[in-house]
Image 1 (cartoon, helix red, strand yellow):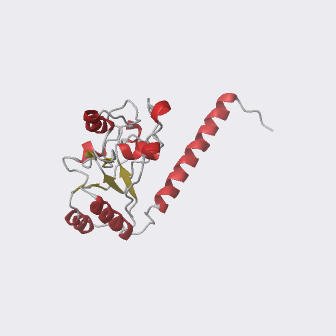
Image 2 (image 1 turned 120 degrees about the vertical axis):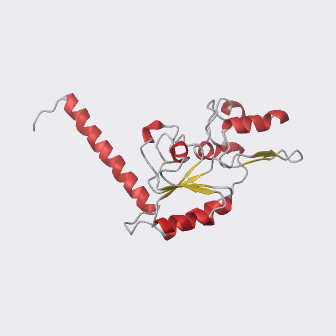
Image 3 (image 1 turned 90 degrees about the horizontal axis):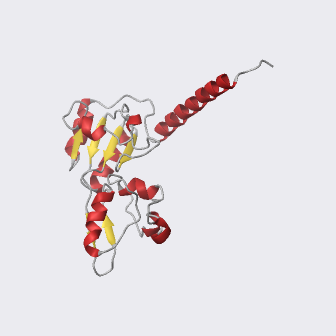
Length: 205
């Protein structure tokens, strides 16, 4: 058995880990679409743009660079074919059905802070940045939050009522990804995690 230095072992292990990561990403993309069929045409994209109540941003558009830029710049070079800036649940459903029809990988982005790059794609990016409303029912005390609402939006919306929400210190982290990850924050030992406060959610399929 040939001897191997510690440096060579680390280097080879890193190569194996990188290959495994790429393979898992490809498997995930295939599961969400992208089966090797012909890419959608410009007319297909134009049809999606017309069906959206929000807007579709394509590469080369004035908003594209800004909307595509994730908070984790490690994934800044992952460029979607289109960004559907949704105005509501109907736009989300329209985007999902279109992506399914054309076998295009589809990913949702709330705030774009995913350390693992789960809010990036080379297919269709469903963007929630226009959905940031926060409303409070004074009678029940229930807070309704849109999927793109960031920590700063939630804090500002709750401050007049003297109530708190368990979240972190970064003002631009959005509620969807935060809650899906559990939602640990500075107040978690006192009031629990973000997901502990979740009563219900609207799931679009």
